[in-house]
Length: 61
Image 1 (spheres, rainbow, N blue to C red):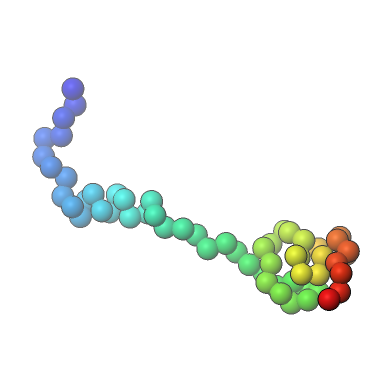
Image 2: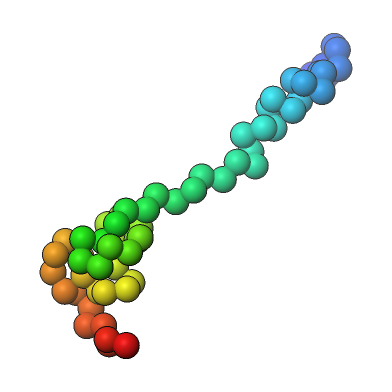
């Protein structure tokens, strides 16, 4: 069996594990119609527009 000859240091162990727990923040862009933040390449959940065209009819409150 393959057995390590020496113990790995804590620094080496922690360096290996460091990137596992990082989460990436999702990208946001401004809607051209209403100016609210939305995820790119998606219909705006606030106004229902995508690329300047109304895709979803939204109720005005």
